Image 1: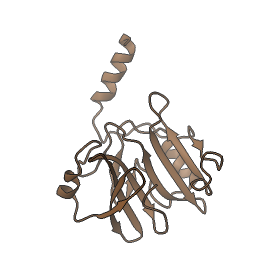
Image 2 (image 1 turned 90 degrees about the horizontal axis):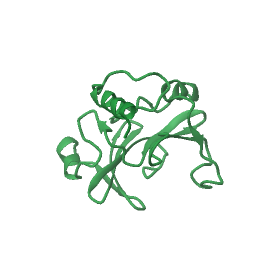
Image 3 (image 1 turned 90 degrees about the vertical axis):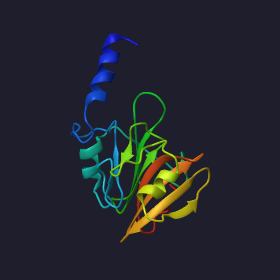
Length: 173
């Protein structure tokens, strides 16, 4: 690894969680606030608000990619390096109806401190009896607050993702 890359990595690691990131950029250490937001994105945000928060560096999901998933606008915000990890934002009537992580992103956590790769048992330590849903290839532990469902995705016994979905959206994204 080059000296510049190493110093950049150290600088990113030294930035305290909670420090504001530049507007219009996918965070390196996203925070999931159940019932409220994921990476600063809230249900009901307009497309303009999403672009202001996460930027314009996204790929729209097309029906060629996934005929069933991409009937309505779905934007894929992915990191430009490494594995295709990031956040997906789904819209219904031009407003955010779901936002969820794409893969397990090291450094992401809930406001309460549940981190990616934590054991499933930690969910029960931090949240009251979640609703269990078996998805294809993973599980979801969800909580409902009004019209918002907050989900923690797990696979192989560990936390692997987060999601906020509006009433009428599938828990398994």
